Image (cartoon, rainbow, N blue to C red):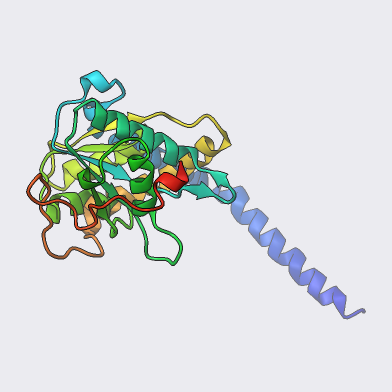
Length: 250
């Protein structure tokens, strides 16, 4: 008998045992899988339903607020421009120039060297004609929950306009409403027509599950809070001067 024969017999026995288990338990496993799929679908649509009447695609329908909050993302994906980033910048600039908001807060991640979402957003908005002293930066918007709750807790805003793509706005508004910020609304940036949109929607499924868990069960707080930062004409942002590289990036 070769040395490999006992190993092969062991593999065959293990495979046979698994096959028998699946044959006898497939109905139960199918019910569990179906139940999980229904739960995921219910959570996904719960988030959409919670926010459906506060997401605006028409600029004329957006109620006036003091502040618009632009949710950050990467400026580039590899060597290519990120269409999600550009779309959010265009929407935020449109919101500002239409007089729907007086100030903008760009909120995102800059905890890695060479990666600074708020500064990239600020430069892009300056290039769209938004005055530098009307743009506040939140460098601790590490994720959507942090951005939303910090806008309320740190920047002192009870009603504001969130700017991102609709699928992201719905999740942000769900977090806002379930965190005691019921007057927040959202302006939908244009969706991206590319292969990336499918990947983003796939990522949105676990993101929404995590949001529900964070808000309803875990009570997750922002990683950083800190001193209050007032927003208004008498309290310009500390980095109110135009960024030198803004004109260079046109």
